Length: 202
Image (cartoon, rainbow, N blue to C red; front, side, top):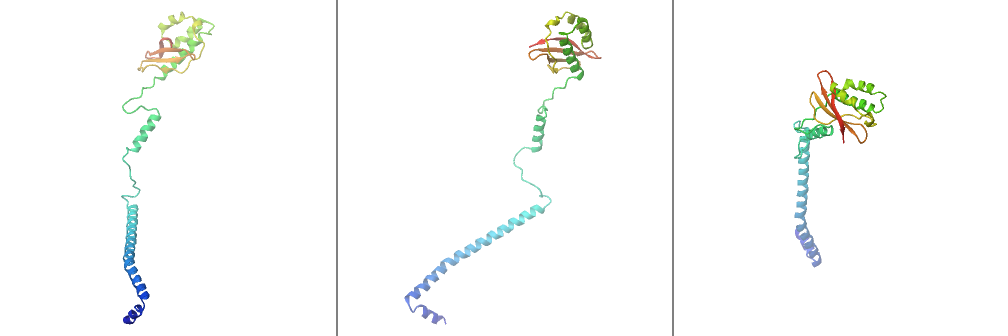
């Protein structure tokens, strides 16, 4: 049967040439097809290994939910520090200045309000009597010599601590008009806060 096929192939030169070309094509293409099949198989195996690795990591309690963290600082501590700064806290290593006693703040504001009222008071004696509860006794004679026409027409603002005070001494700046201020020193005598000195400031 093989010899008959060979005789049929070589009966004409064209038929023999066609068969030779087909054989050459097969010899050239078959190795390439085998390489393509091998590469496809390798890719399939690699994909299966990656899928298995991911599945194992997801189900492993020790690594479940774990995420990669870059080389940054602890985000929780950074956020906490930022929140403290936004809330008005002092940076690390610095203590915030203590708030002045409320009694000292009240005394400073009451004095500024009553002192400004002297401009429109109908009686100097009544004006001095209103000031006595918030001033030191030694300050009353000085107030009695005040030219009330020199007191500005204004309204006392919120006392602002001018210096870091102590438990018994505080200093405040109180706005009396848009362009004038009053500096007030307040001392604690063991019973009450009282104004000891005052004066206008620029």
